[in-house]
Image 1 (spheres, rainbow, N blue to C red):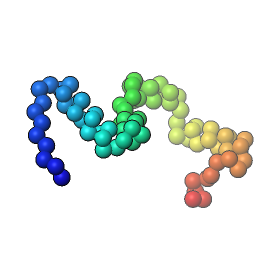
Image 2: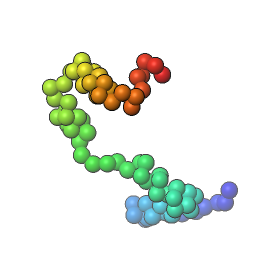
Image 3: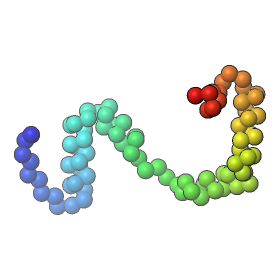
Image 4: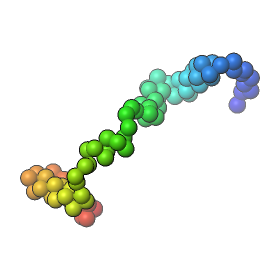
Length: 82
């Protein structure tokens, strides 16, 4: 392993050096896949989930899934058979 001496003067320098190191180590495809995997996303997942699921119970969701499976035979695997 080669010895490396780097002095950072700002957060921008750290980010630039890190990006270069990742790009060199992973190549362009790996670099893109890395950032696609670790991107933080946007919005407030908890608030969105609460709004989306408002009025549902576990039993009502199970019934909805049962209806979908019945309407689409053979499309979904029953978790109990795995």
